[in-house]
Length: 346
Image (cartoon, rainbow, N blue to C red; front, side, top):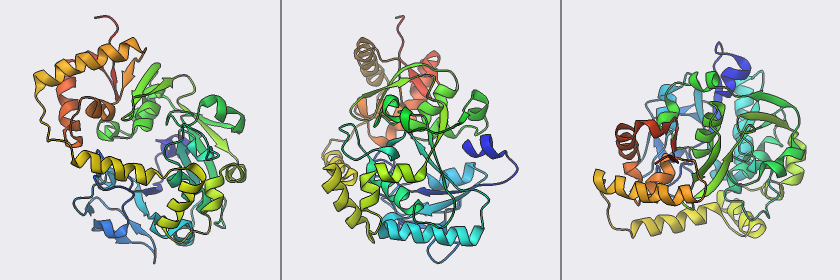
């Protein structure tokens, strides 16, 4: 979506990204590395692309192969298992191999600008590793933050003073250009980014904890941030710059942020395995949906995501798509793509 808006549709992009889906998609905690897939294609000594034919090795899961099927761009696996040193090496090899005309580091939400001690911070490690690597590559890299505050980790008020120029404001046309991907992709921050670009305003409840996220006019904006300023602010990124393993990086996260997001995933994965099996009974689901909506409405919530609904209604992650189809078919007026609207008029 950003590539089309800034550079047009003529040239393809190479998207260097993690295979780090949440437990609703990937039941294994943490990111998947190259050894977590079949069918990857080797681009350089340390870099592999993810073609449509690639598959995650069970029980691992990943959205990347389906994205590769539906996007015209090349997806490349960012593998953090050798720490920031490994990511730096992958980036340097990619730059040498591709000789790109521009390199953008994109973060949705803005938690890449966290200091590390914010009480609302939930997932600093992936961003810190990427930032640390980008600051060590001998190539010009532009840092962009889209959807300020939409990840629920830093508020727009905290982020605003850090922003440089406004690069773009997404519109409904930008969202429509990527087709139906957001109909199935589970990213909550990207879903809210797309919804705000389409004009949706209100409060969206997300994550397993039911975090309320304001949907405002700032939601669809993209700002440039000085890369060195981001590094000087992000204490975890500075700490992990010389790490050679993911375990080392995790240890720094525990020390600086007092937690590791992978530990959270490990604990939640254990909890999920202890839960009894669930089934999707339409009448029961709709009854529980009514109760959920009543409670959300009382808190001023206007929208939610299907990922959050899946967990809030005590359904297994494998039921997410079936739940989505059920709700859209039974109550189509509440579907504000790609979010679910909480009605206030019943």
